[in-house]
Image 1 (cartoon, rainbow, N blue to C red):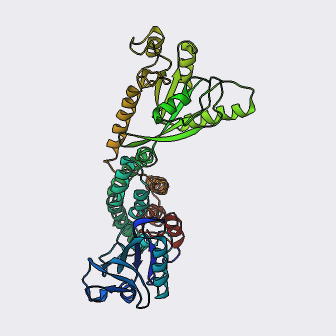
Image 2 (tube, rainbow, N blue to C red):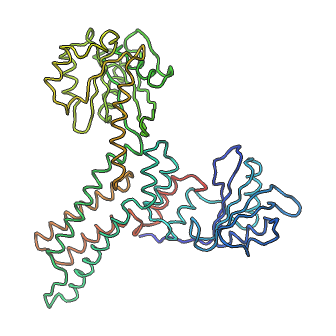
Image 3 (tube, rainbow, N blue to C red):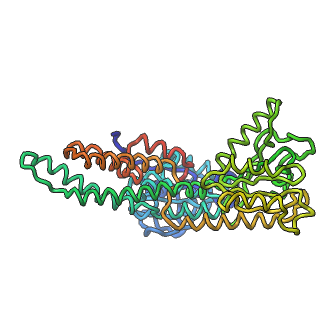
Length: 471
């Protein structure tokens, strides 16, 4: 395992977004952060920053005796009472790119170095301020673009399932220690670790991991949005519906069948959840090579969608066609909403024998509902939006539980589950303690890699390289 290198040098970076703004925050962190800041900041109170109390804000001039760059605020955090767990200074300057550039140059000239991507949060992890999965949640929080993704990222940053994993890992570690202790007394044939109690613990850990693995489907949706495929035959009104939902002319609409050759994706927030609407090419058999590629892409998007909006109308579709579509595309966990489009004369008349036949053949689990709309005239879209809002409410409610949103955590849990199954198999086959220990250590490794109890420089490099500089 690679050695984790703790650095004591002082780093600097712009912590706010680049560009012109009212305020720009420049952050320093490291052993000499306050000492360096004291060299380039002249407080109007005349009290040196090195003598000021932690968590205090000071007004003054930033620069040198020969050149003042800006009048700004300096906020200082001493000792371990900071985000990174080391001395931190934040300069709140005017948001001019020139001022930012000059301040950072001044910091570099006085002993700082430029921070790498995610290095402030990396130091927070290395200094024990955050578990690794909490540190990763910081990036998710910054990237959150909906109420649901914000909520789940905040929950993860505050700990999420960290304590749950750590508690089970510690219990497993205790058992592993007892089993390895038995190896020292192998000639005396003693048993320090009760095999029955061990089986119970493995069962508990396995149940917890399986629950977390199942939660990934919901967690992924909360984080990235719900994929919704808009599908149907050519000229069914798919692009018109997308434009109506967006309230703008995003997709080209034409009476010519097969206008949409590629998928068009747009995000709409409903009920605090992001819905990623995907307008697809009309599904039909075609000899046009380009259109055929579009049809194939449409089918691929349908396979990944959690909601399928299937547009049809009674003149251009037969009942058998709609039935066949449902049979081919229904799968566990997907919701199919049938949209009777071009239904200007039918919206208020209720379901016809066409729809009644569909409902008789397919139970509720196949069809979420049937809604009559007019995409062209934007009629009855509120009923569709209400159905999506109801689903959003259901998804959001799942975010209150411990859930997994990170693919790295999902893979680590999956690997841990496989290792646990090896341990269980070993117990059944009465394997010796030294062989059991190998598989137990593998479980401990995978669980520890989630929270950072087990890690290396390569892993940290992969994780924090995805962060923005300044965070």
